[in-house]
Length: 335
Image (cartoon, rainbow, N blue to C red; front, side):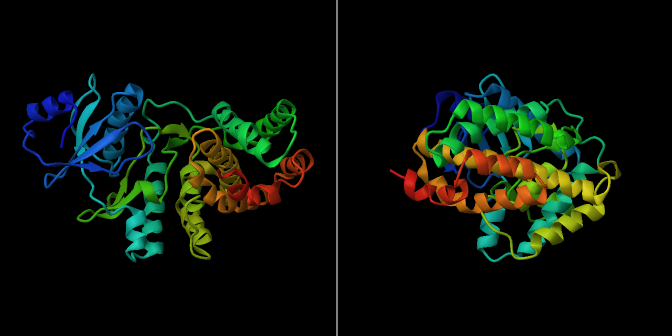
């Protein structure tokens, strides 16, 4: 396989020039991965995002120091954006579930990994940006800019965006905290079941380079209210109860944790609805619209659970029929 000459020189410099390479499935970023067959290693190549590359190095070391399992960096050339990292194999949670692995056991392991992180006072002791109120509000602009106009004709976009942001500025006060390292995309595609490891180290962590310092409940919500799949009936509540039983004391009473969980869910689902429309209309990727009905349901449920009646009333008044129109976006927006 032909690779970049600098990547080939990097492999040769570290005794891997004779390795057989295969392209390894990667995320949606410019980052590329090549598997060194039979060597337990991946070549990671990312020359487009030096900040993200440096964050990957930093957070890989941090998570492993905490007793969790992120792919270890064996050797790296930061200037060239090249690294040899540990290869965790192919047993993502998505693949494990498809192969018939016990859903409850997989999710309990992931919740336990979060509890391990959240109960360790060293969790937020890493140099990463904060996932704070300003960032959350900026993310909600995506809903106003893309989703709202898609479900309502002749929308006064500037007026809607101003009112939308003001309501959320008030609502999100309880989650404007920096309690832990938040990985931001903690879901089945980015989790792995690792053989030969014990305890929470059996849960492999991927795609953490965008991690930030934020509220503990965010990754839990990202796991249990996934845009990609529904959990078996009753499993979300059972897993939420498992988290509550082991949550760090500084998070307060169970009802406080639940409230923040649902607040964050509402914010995330709103953002994702906007992202899916943007992916279709701007980026020519309509396939994401197939997930809109699930996220729409999650958004409506979270609005009710978080008791965001003022935001619900605002949506109903400014976006008449928005729920019905959103349910047909895949038909109406697809080319």
